[in-house]
Length: 138
Image (tube, one colour):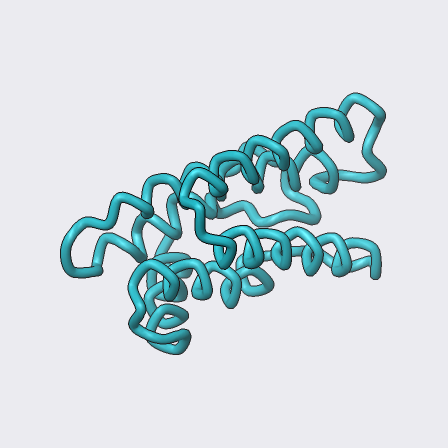
């Protein structure tokens, strides 16, 4: 679990879902744990900003710090595609919250599939099936 109270953000751990989905891939890719770590940081940042009600100044600072750490972590891979997907995750999630909605695992499934596809090269549809199987079985 992300540690966020029930509210506007996913209760499922994005890191855990991604690792579960990647565990079914052939071989071990050293990028998988780096992406998973970045997802954990991104989710903590998102939770600080949006988990419940308007964010306080302190929660904004905590969230911004976690986002920065997520970007630094994923940037170690030196593959702009990873950063692009993570940026879209933040943008799409924030947009959903701003419109008065919630962000659940369903919202981020296509993004997680995009990250998994970068690692696996198996295609978006196959990666999305893996993410759904890993996330909805949690």
